[in-house]
Image (cartoon, rainbow, N blue to C red):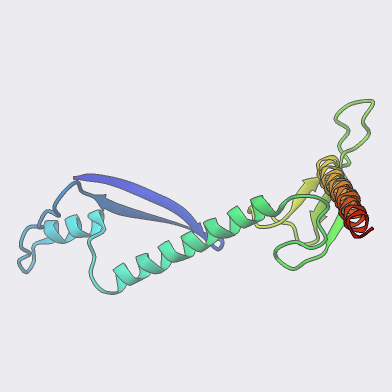
Length: 170
């Protein structure tokens, strides 16, 4: 039987659970007699608890799944200049006070007002945000230009059809 520890965070507390990972059919545990302390300890360490402990573990796993989904959402949402953080707080512009280089006095960031380094808040470098915003705007201009060219081609084609219809009438 392969036993692995699963460590995850729920809120601010860190929890550790041991899960039993078996291949194929589940093995039956030994029959438990009254006072068989070794069998009870074996069941506790393999994570095969009944009742409330299993329900608690299920709640923990659901909370862990929700946390991972939120972190994924925040990671995918960091594009362009952010207006609001996913937590609902406003964004502010800050300058990092630490001088990394002589020619670069400080880096600028868009950062959540209530920033905590837990993966659920924005702290995005200003340069990256502006670059992404410029790329997005360039794409919109390109799409608009393409649409204008298509409209002009359609106008020319319709005008040609109209002229052909008028020539047939005369």
